[in-house]
Length: 259
Image 1 (cartoon, helix red, strand yellow):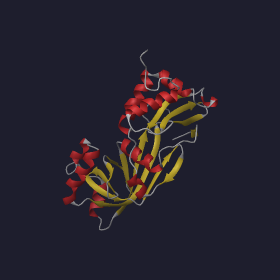
Image 2 (cartoon, helix red, strand yellow; image 1 turned 135 degrees about the horizontal axis):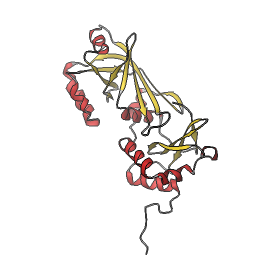
Image 3 (cartoon, one colour; image 1 turned 45 degrees about the vertical axis):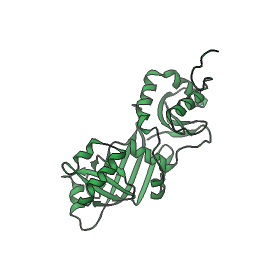
């Protein structure tokens, strides 16, 4: 992650806990590191209602073997990477690190845990648990996120109370479509940038209920800019209106028929 965040106005933005929950939902893969061992891929990573993090790792890997054989919990570090939806010069939007002791999931609880995960994230990789993968549980001791705003930690209670952004699932296809088919929209949003950034290459970087984010790639570095909505939105209709207002479109509700 390079560059710096630029604030256009003092408006509401996602809390640290909300940013972490959204980043965790978008990050389809992660790595789990144990002291003295090479990191391994963690296909599934899910914060459970009780505050434990469910993690799946290869059944024949070091993590599954060491945690399964150890008489005491084994300390681990889970790293999640949130990539930008578009191929940018610097593709990483944020990194999340979750640290804590690891336990094998009790065999009689595995099915119930997988059901809980599947209700929110029906990932086909869940079907590999018990065959190619093993389910581990991490007690959360610390959570840290790092992005263009800097690094910040958040407590477990705040993390459990937060929810992912409502537009997480649609963000990637929506921004890719905007970049490929609606450069006029990007140009109108870019007109809101400080004059010092308007000469750079402007690309869509992110979208959430609080606003739109642009990445400006210049010869001097990368800059992330948040364009806040007039107020937070919760559905696609509200999002459409907010984008029109941000663009300066006079038809907030779309084109109107002539009287």
